[in-house]
Length: 322
Length: 236
Image 1 (tube, rainbow over the protein chains, first blue to last red):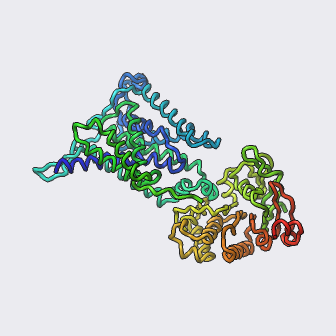
Image 2 (tube, chains in turn purple, red):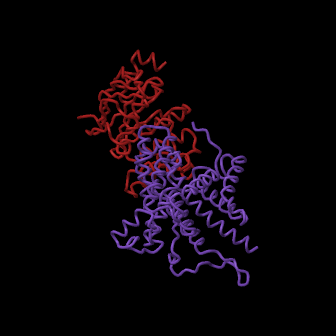
């Protein structure tokens, strides 16, 4: 019973993370109707940026180590920001990179009236460049966040009663809390603010948005920032939990994120959240000695859902537009 | 006095096909000008060119003494041109109230916006009853009212109306035209595109006839109503 409860809590933590990561895809998809394939790279970028901002050291195999050593006398940035501050700034770095991606991989094609599918390919290209650039800068070694990064917080927190412990790693709780805060903030932003409503207008009908005087280009740029920000937070939280496993580690999460949004029904916030939790919980119940098949579970689940509900768990059946 | 809006020698083409050829059209402040013509003549394209949704190949668009031929669509709205587009283009998944407020997206005066929302609800009582409903659930006539009200929320000096009577029952269409009369009385300048030429000319001050991308006839609305060519081709 205790193990069951523990698995549920773990599933909720990783599920919330999948949710915010998938929301990054959803934001861009709902507006441009195309998947931004750099999302996995931005996930890794955010993690590395946060890592550097906490003042942690870079491995000598990356070019950044010698650069830092030459300028600061040690292979790290000369600062040691608290984790939460680094997290926000690191996610901003990913967000700004997202804006750059929009200007390089998406806008030029959009301005020429190209098929959205082409942007998918160009984003894939930018993604490869980004990953290789990161590899050049920091190498491919795994970067665990130092144990001291969360300050004085205990390693695990007990959710059980004395005698029947249900320990959950503090990292998982940080993951869940940060993710849920972001989901709530994003929901509020989209549904209750003027800019959020304008963003929904662009998503629903770009022509109407133009006619209302909405500068759609600027809102698309904002969307890419938010998307990259969410990706960067997700990358950092995964890095905090299991270490930053090389520049490529975002790619696997990138595919999983795609499974999440398809699972939830493309294109809205509740869909991504439900899809994220569904996947997180399903994975949590993979028995320990089959853990290598975790990813297979994700895609088997996706397969089953698509067979029975092609529109996703929360998706609406396609409505004929007049 | 120079006109509020002036199209000079405007050409628009879509992928090599000429949609508009050397259009010269002017709308002066206070006028209700109607653009009539058959399906596919280029009426909607003309409005889309003014709202800057399509590029002009050559020629110029001048509004209020300012060249807007290369302006961004949102700049045009800021300058005072609003459009109620063909097919209404509701934000179907947002409420009536949110559709109206988004109509005022370019404005910052919160109190003024809310006062204008109240004014639109007074003008269109049926929208007031449905203020929290999603716009997609409104009837065709109600959607048309919302499209016009939403366009008015930006406090335009020039209102572009594209086929406001399309698909509406005759009684509802007459209601919409009564509102156009009201707006004209209130001093709003209107450029009206209509298939229902008779109805449009009865409510306009001046009219243009567009045929296959070219303006062929222009004159006071009353004169067009009595013009033999117009009568034969458009008034049946």
